[in-house]
Length: 367
Ligand code: ATP
Ligand code: MG
Image (tube, rainbow, N blue to C red):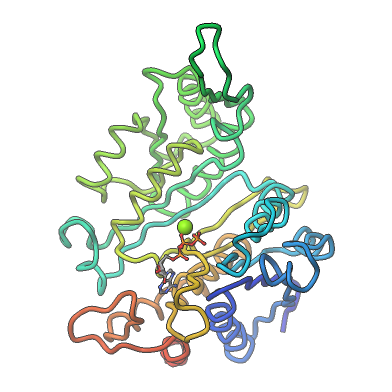
């Protein structure tokens, strides 16, 4: 057995712990059947950490996250903590992790499972087999650019303003992530900006092209304006493989792509930082959905987004593509067998609990 990979689990609040439990079962299965073990540590984050320690993320847990090979994050927040002051809100736990780990590349796959093609907001034939990966820049752009503010002008009018700003290094590091990922996939990248109206877009386009020509000439690169990309995503989404874009456009386009897949309970994500001297990137994996307080503690939540986040971890942090394939195939086969949690119910399917969905995945892995 090899136990050289450390994994920090931060289940958090609401349905976080329930869906994390199903990943634990897969980890146990891997130890038993694949002779792979991880050193798994577990910590508190969000409301759970606030209740225990008065802060949504302790320094010890932050240090554990910095030392781990990867972090698997559940979800944070809920009505119990809604009235807390800003500084200790559950969400601040996640924001600190992102900031201190410098996770600048947010990966959001939009994958349509054959069995769920009917759940898409588009015609099934447009999305059947869809497999897109959006790489969103996460720590720069107009959400953070300075100056920003609201001011009163001499004429008495008020003005709200933000600054869209990208430096060469910010563009190049996220573009490199996209090109590296494309090499593992269909070798195709769409770089998306608004170079027709924005200076930051002009620089973005130039730098991505330069990086491509210097280091990734074998990857097919196309530049596309963000408005066109939005239109193409809902018209002929299968033309895309990897899309790389800035913080604001990525925010919008990834939600748009998410709707092509049908369900919030199915979507994983990853956030990656810069590689260290040994080439290892800091990484945090989490489902796209939140803590879903309305169904928490009732064994109703769909654990598949969390399970697919774990599969991404196997693929991107641990280079365990074969194991990632096994997990993803198990998800696909379980869905094909008509097993559904309530959020993805369709006619003729069997409605099951979180635990029963976990059972079905393990049974499928055992085959
Ligand atoms: P947050 O602010 O944390 O993102 P939110 O209220 O915006 O929270 P979610 O917590 O993701 O969003 O929940 C939105 C809706 O989707 C809720 O009704 C919830 O029950 C449902 N939902 C979210 N995740 C799942 C899941 N894994 N399985 C089943 N239903 C889910
Ligand atoms: Mg939300």
